[in-house]
Image (cartoon, one colour):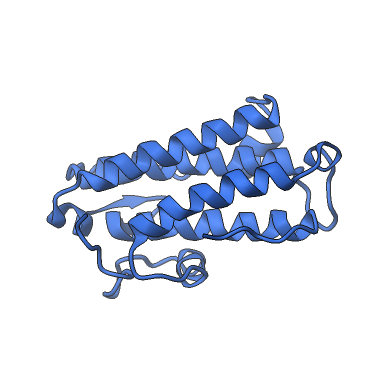
Length: 180
C-alpha cells in the first residue's frame, strides 16, 4: 500500500475552517488505514445502540441517531464522488449540498441495520477508489461548494467527518466509542 502524506500540507489545499477542524480531529499518519479502521468503529458502535435510541432526538441536537447515520452515508457518497472527479482531473466546479435538507426530508428511511450496511458499503467503495489512485492523483484538486480542495484533503475530511459524528453518537447514547 502506498503511504499517503499525513495531512493536507500547503496553503489553499483546503480553505474551509470547518474542514480543517474535522481533519485535526483525527489521529494517525495514513488516511487509508484510518478510513479502514473506522469500519470497525461503525460496526461496533451500531451494535451498541439500543433500538429505543435510534429514533430519539437527544437535545440539544435536532437529528435522530438514524438521521445521523443517514447523513454520514450521504456525506460518504458525496465525498467519494468528489474524490473520483478530482482524481480524474475533472475541473468542473461542483455545487455544495444542504445536509440539513437531506436529513429533514427523510427521503431514504430504512431500518437501522440497512443504513449501517449502506454506510459500510460506501466506505468500502471509497477505500477501493483511494487504493487504486496513482500518487499524483492525490494532489489533484477541484472546486466544491466554492472551496478548492485536493483529493488528499477530501480523504482526510471524510475520515474527520465520520469521526466527528460517531463521537457525538457515542456521547448521546452513553456508550464508549469503539476504536481499533
